[in-house]
Length: 357
Ligand code: SF4
Image 1: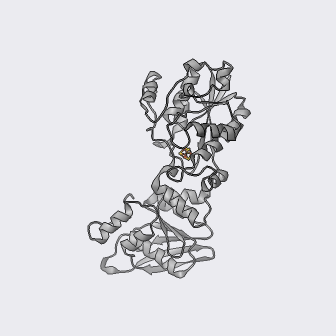
Image 2: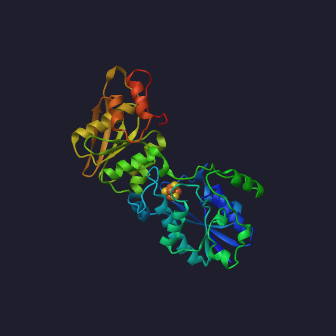
Image 3: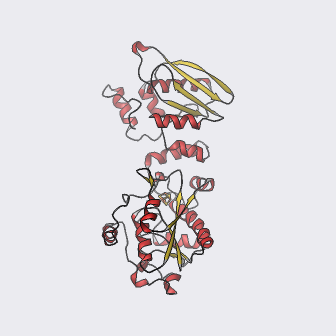
């Protein structure tokens, strides 16, 4: 008897697998990566670490453009931020179902805990997932099984229901205790979720969709880095905050984008797209100058630009734009950048490139 488990690498999915392994069932695991993942721990993929500890074979699957389209337009809507948790679960369960059939597994395992998450782990949400995926009775949730209707694996005696658990709600102490009994000590912090659940990130996604842009792997990868500014003409400017982000932006340049670099003092690389008028190109240069190291005596900065279509490049001379002006265009810097900008304009502090935020 073989089962396929959805493994995020977090404590719940790890425990769900251990509980089923205790019953002598062979388990393989599947993990999904997306541009919104928070799945790396110190450079290690959390699911890979957990799979190794559990001794299970791991299948890693990428969520592609179909997933991004779903995030942009979810059937069941969003949670608190831009997290379409119910649609996301259905998407992943559908793909897990295919993998289950491919590897000859008889049922799926998830680490879901009834009522732990308000959108995707309510009883009705679990039922919707089963209905929409055609997996009714085939999703075993070992951590909450005793609160739920018996599944096919329980009814057929493949799994002993009496040895499954009755966890419920957001209280995590029982999981932590159970982890101790299994000798599991290395697991990521239990916050879970993905970037879509973070207000600051969600504001950037919302802005992108509100401006009629398509969420693609390219645009989603940009959302993860830099300061994002929506310019008066409707274009977008992403400004690097450190060397790694500057490099990422330089690599992301492509047709329809303009790459800006500070020449006269150390400063950020910035990538603009949707910028169609000369005025906004000059504003971009002023923003780059704003985040570059200051020059003595109010000398204008030299900012190089390269337009990737129609091909054109040159050097602009720009004075740093006022902090409060730049702050008006920043998307998603809730309470940090804007707050700092306000303080800076009142002479209390200065926001400079290279600092976090
Ligand atoms: S938190 Fe993110 S990854 Fe998790 S179910 Fe919701 S949308 Fe999907």
